[in-house]
Length: 88
Image 1 (cartoon, one colour):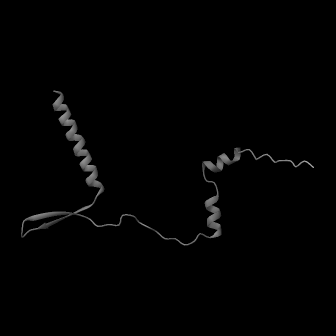
Image 2: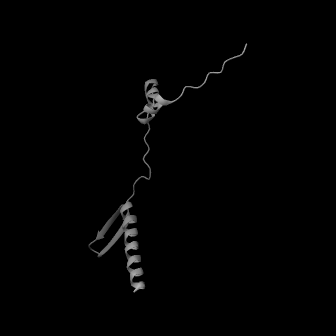
Image 3: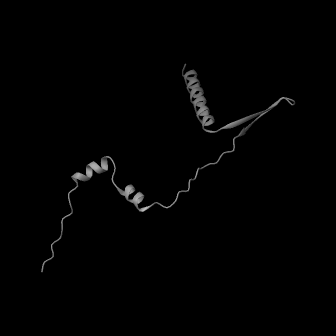
């Protein structure tokens, strides 16, 4: 009984892995009706998308440095650094 369970489990895992792999890649199926042949080719598409942006302005840089959300809330509870007194 155990070999049948292992076979079914391996079949399901193999099928799921194949479906996941095939869904991530895009394929094009070319069918030649005259010859009766079908070919499967991987679709050519860029691997990474790159977007070029201009240099940030001063206001954009300041906005990016501001704490947002939880960081802004937690900043209220930060203790100020102790100031060292100079002995004269």
